[in-house]
Amino acid sequence: MCLAIPARVVQLRDHQIAVVDLGGIRKEISLALVPEAQLDDYVIVHVGYALGLIDPEEAQRTLDMFAELNQAQAQTP
Image (cartoon, rainbow, N blue to C red; front, side):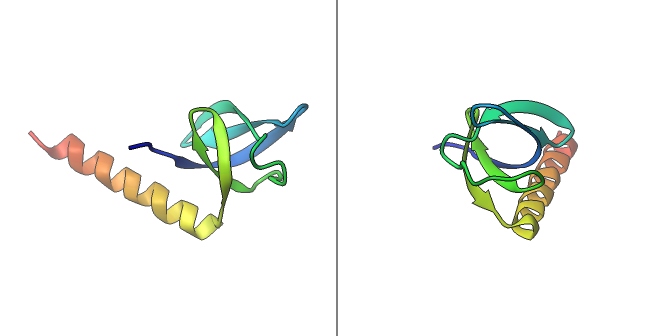
């Protein structure tokens, strides 16, 4: 099983490299598989690579679900 998470592109760099925002954490990733990604697009990220574009509303729903899971896990004894 693999986990890919949505992230917003906050900076485009040279050579198909971008910086994304992952819940407040900035990470450099490769856009080699999604060269059409633009600033403020949401991409699905897995091990440092953008795998595809994702609709902003779907990205937010997914991020909200991750936050709910994290909160529920924190409340479990």
